[in-house]
Length: 327
Image 1: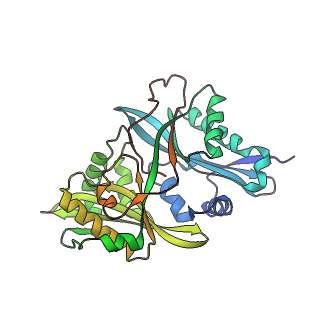
Image 2: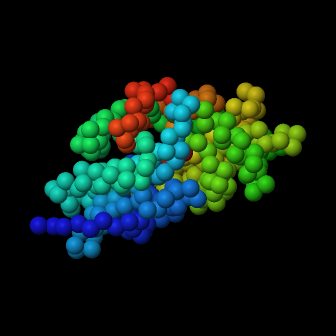
Image 3: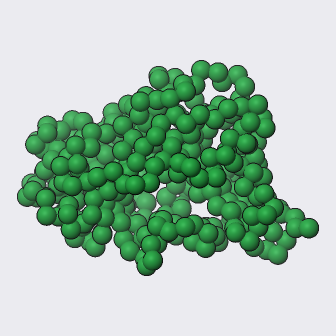
């Protein structure tokens, strides 16, 4: 019989190897620096990233709960976002999926968190695993929002781009931190949204590896923001995709909005990205992307929402959109 020990915040190279060996392509390749983007940000808590290690020394499973303040219909909760759930195929007969989920739910409850969120692929076993973990504790999980990514193939998008607006678009600088906080806070106004924390802004927009942030500046004021990351993708071979991490376009007129998006897309495609992905979650107006050939990707996703305590009774069954910066 195999036994497993809990390991708090295991080495991220080891976690990356576990994911790469067990995730089915196409998937992003989460190397150490990509994992650290979420797990090691200033307001995160590495103690909420836990694995199970077999007696052989092999990391058998892993799950991270990323803390955040979550606003749902105007009320703010102490919440976690569950991500990077992985179980080694070598140990699946041991029901580690249920054990790992239950371990982290209890850990979050013990630490006073009120609400759980996660994003899962529709129809996968992870949905049932999460439901069992909460059901065993007398709590119910709801699928609060269904969505897809918008995907733009590089050759299609590049053929539809308008001229670049180099007079107004530039890279984000440390002096833009205040404007970035205001823009991100204003953009996170969906019915369910994370509360933007000031201490995370510069790390989110500038300090993370692989991330580039661009701003739209007019008359000395920063009025638009777009942050992207260039991610390796495993799909037969390792390629590159661009993922839109943050988007704040609400203060731009339609013409400036289109010019800003076109300029950033041209820059990221020039770096070798084969496709660009943006989550269609109801958080941002994505018409500028649709006009450039972005279409809904086939894979369907669900936003899961659940109370972590029995006295949290006012969560909605569904929301009309959400804004989270963790996927």
